[in-house]
Length: 271
Image (cartoon, rainbow, N blue to C red; front, side):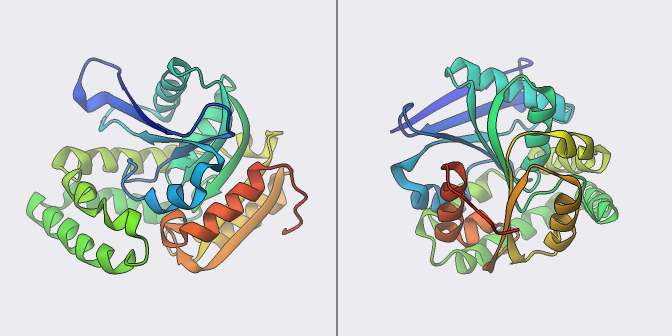
């Protein structure tokens, strides 16, 4: 049920993109593009809740300081092609939504539909992203380590009802290296520079949105308003009351059920 793939592009470990594949090829395929942290360490609860209904493909980003969003998209396409995956649904979490739009804009991967999870088109508060980029680049390594271990303590409380995430907290912490911090800063810069509104407004693919009610990082009222007004392909946008920005992790069962309804051919009227 579970497989792994490692693809190295550019010849260095800093530019390594990985896939993990769960489920049989005969099932509907859903590709998870993680947020700023860039790996699968927080998605276990959602994957467990989704169960054996879909083939779930998890992406871990390279810790590159040079790749553009287009470079990321090309690497993802290549990795998927090596596994014979040429068509699937795209699930973009927060930062991952920017890669989702890059894949759609390139038009080389046959996406069946797109789902934004705490995601966005053009970030509604780019000044906040610029500030986060500057802070991420200027904090000392000692402070960075303190923040990560403090987050780990908080995460054990935050995900206390999601054992699949709790089991990976230590791995999450171990992956937060100095290079990882610099890669996150580079990803934040790409958010500031990116504006995929033209892609989102012109796509014919079905578009869905999923957010947690408490989300100061990507305020969902602004995202939903823009999509309703400018994206004719928007089919539904759901806000989960008991979730926050990491909606897939903080409300995994509700999120999985909603996503499953969307990737199946059902009639939905939730706009």
